[in-house]
Length: 98
Image (tube, rainbow, N blue to C red; front, side):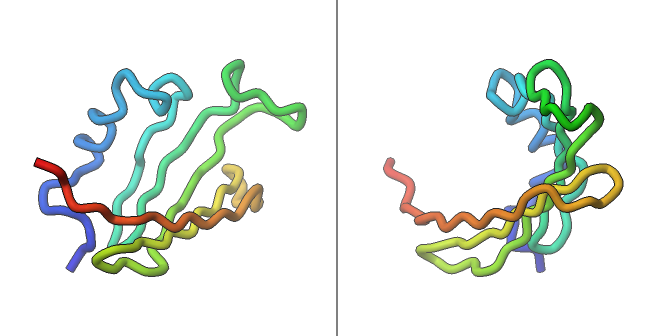
């Protein structure tokens, strides 16, 4: 069973990105798996690095998904699978205020 809500698709994730920083940076979601999401971002005039152009791919994997906290690991690689960055984020899960 996926940890993501029923109905979450690549199309719905990419639609949520319209008029956000994700759209401005050219980030597109490319894959959803069980506890994982993958997206790619062009390295261009918006994100240029001195080491070259192309795409970077971010893969996020759930480490812990609880009722009050989530922990995610993010690995960013080049198109040639060269590791660029590893990051981890811990988030509090808050009840929706009505």
